[in-house]
Structures are given as C-alpha cells and as structure tokens.
Length: 324
Image (cartoon, rainbow, N blue to C red; front, side, top):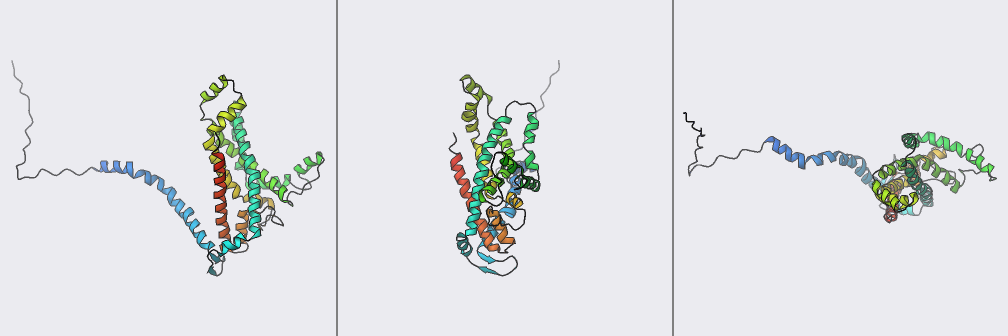
C-alpha cells in the first residue's frame, strides 16, 4: 500500500505593509492594434475618398467661386469685381437662351428616358430566351464612342439623305432641317441622349427588381391581380429608392449636357447653331472661358449652373418622393 502526496505549489510571498505591490504590465501590442482596428481603421479606409474629393472636388469648387468674383482673363489682368459678373450674367440674354435650351432638352430627354428604362427593365426581368445576351445588348450604346454616336445620328437626321427625313417623306411630310430650328434640334439631341443612356438606367432598375420578394407577386396573383397591375402596384413602389437615384443622376447628366450637342453641331465654336438654338449652359461656359478668354464670367456661369442643378434635383426629389 502506497500513499501519494499531492504536490502543492509554493505560496507566493505577500508584500509587507511598507512594500508596494508590483506594477501592472503595460498592454500588449496586440491589444493596441485591436483597438485601432475597431476605432481607427474605418477612418483610414474612407480617407482616400475624402482626400481625392478635397483635391479634385472641394478645392476646384472654392477656386472657381474665387475666380467668379474677379475680372479674370485667361492670360491677362485680374481685377476684383465682387458680384459684378453675376449681375451681368443675370441680364445676359445669351445665358438665359442657353438655360432655356438646357431645360428643354432635359425635359425631352429625361422623362422618356426614365419611363423607357423602367419598361425595358420590366421586360428584361421576365423569363426570356437569350436573356443574358439581351441584358448585355442594352449596354452596347454606353460603350460606344460619343463621336461615333454623333456621326451616326448626324447622318440619320441629315436634311437631304437622312433616314428620318426619308421616313417622313413616305408619310407625306416634308423634309425637316433638324439643325436649323430650335424644336427639331432639341428632339434630335434628346433622341441621341435617350439611345445612349436608357440601357444604363434599365440595368440599374433591373438589379433593383431582382431584390423584390417573389412572395409579393405570388400573393397578388392569388388575389387576381394582372401582370400590369402587379407592375404598377408592386414593382414601381418597391423601386422608389432606386428611381430616386436614377432621376438624380439623369438630372445631373441632363443639365450638364455637353458632348452630344457639341458633336451634333460639328464645329468647335460652341455656339449651338447659328442663332444659339441648341447651345447648352455647359457649352456657354466653355465658350466664354476658352474662346472669349473670360474666365471670371465663365466661372460665374458655372456656379449658376450648379444652382440650377440643385433646384432641378430638389424638384425631382419632391416629385419622386410621392411615389407610393
């Protein structure tokens, strides 16, 4: 018979009354990194965007405001004017003509563009043969060069041998000189813009449609709702946040319209036709800055365009927020 004695660790000596306890060890490097990972890393990850925005967004915006308060020639004297450029711009008939052209082409292009994109997204959302190819096909206008688009549409809307005038001739209507009249130039440019950007908006709306639960459609079908009623009563209200985004982007793009009318004009004068019948505000800014070399006046026009975009976005937001 053997007896096993349990081994007990030696007792740690207690400090005497006059002796201080040992100091606590400092936090390890791993603990500090963990705290930085939780608190500081999110700011590090988002900092590149704010740095780029500060350099390429905030600084140019503030510098443009500073230039707009001066008589600032591109390569000449500079003098302080205060709000003189803005006062002259408000009384400039050419500027308001550009504002009217921009607003007219914006209405003709944006409203049909959003409606067509919504209907096209609804059609692509259904089960079709070759659905992937069809979805890729609607993005082809987006990757097409603006110059190629302008050349093709200039031929389509040509006065003598254009396809559009040929079709109008079959219906008994006379040929239209599309570049000479304000309304005809607006329509031609709006068609060009719609052809280029409708597919892009349709893909965005299609991606949002795919997130809508199928149970809603199944319940509506059991209640006897037709496909058209399901589309307007379920799909459209569920797409409200995406529609707001699409409308905002289309508003900004429509009010800063530049490439399409410039290529439709076919010359670098930025006049928008002989009488400025389709000159946009962006074209007016470029003309004042780089043809007339008046940077201060162009900067003031750019800031008024910025205000116009804010007002247009606000109006569209008040309209789209009523979608239920």
